[in-house]
Amino acid sequence: MEFKNAWESYTAEDLTALTALNEEYKAFLDNGKTERECVIEAVAMAEKAGYRELHAALKKGAPKAGDKLYAVCMNKTLALFQMGKEPLENGMNILGAHIDSPRVDVKQNPLYENEGLAYLDTHYYGGIKKYQWVTQPLSIHGVVAKKDGKSVTVCIGEDPADPVFVFTDLLIHLSGAQMDKKAAQVIPGEGLDLLVGNRPLEKSKLKKDQKDAVRANVLALLKEKYDLAEEDFVSAELEIVPAGKARDCGFDRSMVLAYGQDDRICAFTSLYAMLQENKTLRRTSCCLLVDKEEIGSVGATGMQSFWFENVVAELIAATRGESFLATRRALANSNMLSSDVSAGYDPLYADAFEKRSAAFLSKGMSFNKFTGSRGKSGSNDANAEYLGDIRRIMDGAKVAYQFAELGKVDVGGGGTIAYIMAKYGMNVIDSGVAVLNMHAPYELSSKADVYEAVKGYRAFLKNA
Image (tube, rainbow, N blue to C red; front, top):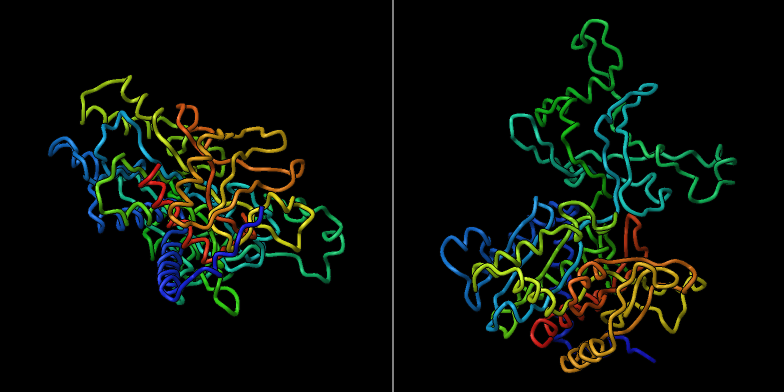
């Protein structure tokens, strides 16, 4: 089946709207390089669109059709609801995406000095090619929770006046043995230590018999700027990500090159589609942005927790009275697009793809009937009837879309949150946007696909 290039169908009006949308998308990426920052950005956008915090709203009365509500879990996961005309028990139309991305985390006892250089010890998060992260300008984002209950927000390396940080690599002149290693072994996990200093603390400020003067200087600077002591690293969540802003890519500015597009491209387009809807719809709409997908959707803020189910139970209790059965029905009767990126076909690495079943940049939203790996292990496999309905919705809204899978059958694979939501008995299919360089420090997407995804998600919320 041949899918058309979306750019060929655009009018001048479409191109103006597409450009404006992608400027907002790039700003979202710049402001949300961690899951916490994404939640802050999304809540600000939601409140501007008239959404109210769920528990505060429930104190003022039961929600009614048209009400816009949101709930946050531990500052890392977010659910938005626009209440529909039908009872919640009849089900929701859900857009789900994840807002965590592969990165490198700072350990709890990280700071040390070695031969006049100060380092932070790290542990990578999610699936990365470690050799891609060396010699890149990097920034540190996160939060430090102190014993007195106060939290300190950290963001170093994004302002042009800020310093940046780096993982070093061996010079080519001495790297003969290194170059003979397999790619997975070129940079070991314990070799990703972040270089953070080289200047020793002035001798007059050193304590008696104090060694490691460069390390001492780093601690002095942290104390001066953030009022942080070394022991505060224990209760810190500090994430190392590429420094710098999302950029247009190509002479024609047709693409976006940026960190974290897996899966913030689907998070942004889902959120944007949700916030654009001002009419009260038949069914309740939901946008779910979750954490921890890159490490198995585990933990209190991952999709495998009961948090989302508990929020739905709160809404059921507020609208019709507490009912375990009504909560289960609301979930089972729902339809969901599990929105996650697809592997874009790269002709330079054609051997990894089966071309007839690959997702291409600029050919619109990508639907995956199944994900998983090899024999569909770990997959949600959407039923044919639901796929037929999805086709009806997308064709009716004139959305550019394609059907694909992730690479050749025996080459590998990947997972999403789809199979977790499918356990409730709801209809779920994987959908999203094709990207190149998935899980690299800088990923590549087509602006046309961002535009088509918003169109597709809006059509789904209205018509599923």
